[in-house]
Amino acid sequence: MDAKFLDILVCPLCKGPLVLDKTRQELICKGDRLAFPIKDGIPMMLETEARELAAEEEVK
Figure (cartoon, helix red, strand yellow):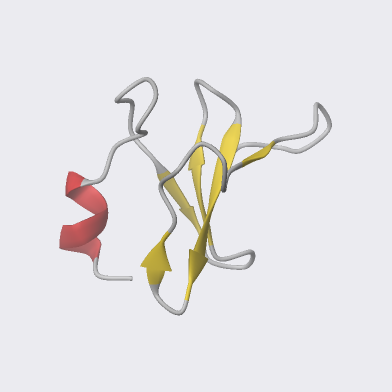
């Protein structure tokens, strides 16, 4: 994913910053503990598409 594109994306719920998890191809919101998937290079920024991060998952 293009770094410039990542700089302008924010969490659709809290408007906080997102962290790219390249391994899982997800954008992580630390504040809401949500992971938004990236499918075919396109971030799925809908709350219904996001998964909740488990308590044991480390947010980098």
